[in-house]
Length: 313
Length: 313
Image 1 (cartoon, rainbow over the protein chains, first blue to last red):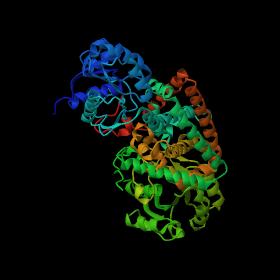
Image 2 (image 1 turned 45 degrees about the horizontal axis):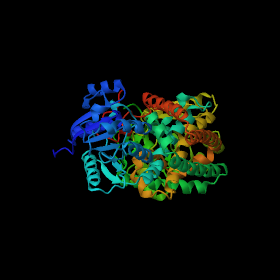
Image 3 (image 1 turned 120 degrees about the horizontal axis):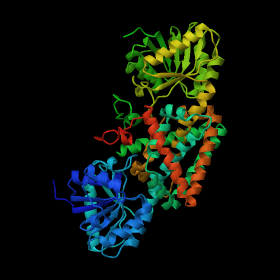
Image 4 (image 1 turned 90 degrees about the vertical axis):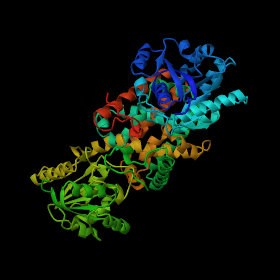
């Protein structure tokens, strides 16, 4: 195995992403050692029990000797955590995060910065519908995109820090892309934030239909509904913070979505089959593009049906 | 293998569902022989080539000697096809369908009925995002619900016909449920029709965002968007007909969905984190209920991540 990219990394927040970084860093030798801290004592105990790495009882102890600190907490907690972490870090080391809203994350890190630490916000486009330390696994980031949103600092030290963090994520199997903060937040609003909001919403709508029993919604969910419930099972705190902090981009997408939906609604009401055909037909090409880009499996029904070969056309 | 339920079945329409019934009937010995017809000559040729069963060049030849005829065509085509099929059928045999809107299907079958044939509308809650004869496979209906919406005919002959059709679907591995037409269409509007409409819509919205490139939508689709693209890849003709024929129930669900979404939008705009938390938290329990009911796999990310065990909690 090649030399570790960092001799010691600190992970603050031992949830799905933090635990997966810990597992992956050990598995692929990306860090000489891994130390974790979580503000929840039960999570710390669990992280110790399942062997995620060294677990400290204070945040300061976790970060003191780390080359790179990963903040793996909900976006709404970043400002407070970053402010506590930075003074305890060694000069010249790296502070990064994994938050889904980079505008908020960059602001939180910048506000905490004291000029001694390289601040490099980041966001792995990877996750599952599960949460907590037990949900983490080493292969989560393999073939996934990892987006870094570095500042406009062009000093050799900063660029070298970005290069090193890039190497770390590549060692975990990720493909690394650099993007500016505003663009990230616009792209993720449509590819991730709006889909989650819609999924949360349709689940709520279905369960409030007094003309249909909840048991029936569950029983016949294979008709399409079940596909939405996976992402609606994601961590509520994380998603609350996403919507509160990427408000403008989400509201812009949401406005367009509602406008488009109103047009479909009108076509249904007035029996405009041609309009429906036009919209439904173009949706087909996108699935193919996503599969061709390696961003989803071509297995039908997400591979739910056993003994059926994926379509290889 | 037990005796076939029917000595000969006829399948009109050799798409995903028709081809799957043909494959399953042969695989599980549910029919002594299978004969198919499709109005598209290319589909007939393909059905012959891949060995779905005997393929006739006229609809009348396909149904003449069948004990049971399965209409596997889009809902909008049912009335015409049923009117052509019924006169060619043997007295005392069964005519069923697989359409997603039972109000429309029951009306189409009833209009075509001449009193000699048992009319039993049906709907398998099974499918994939693919279409055409090659998409069919024998295990599609295993552990899936099949809903029958029989008429209120209580004659011994009709009840025996319903019993026999039930046995046929059970032989294919399905769980059979009986429901009245209006209830079916209300339940499916929320569990299947609305989810598909939303999926079609979000895909269209994403591709019309001029501030985000289409390549970026595809590239970062693992953030959630890709989950919606699977059902948006379903057959456009089938879905156009669903929305045109289950209009009232779909518009009712859609009205509620939009109302709920407007409430979430308002909560985002005014920073009401408590409201978001409340809605997002209850969505979690539904995923668990669906997995517990055996209506989806508990594998994380729909099993996309290799070498990760399904959550068994």
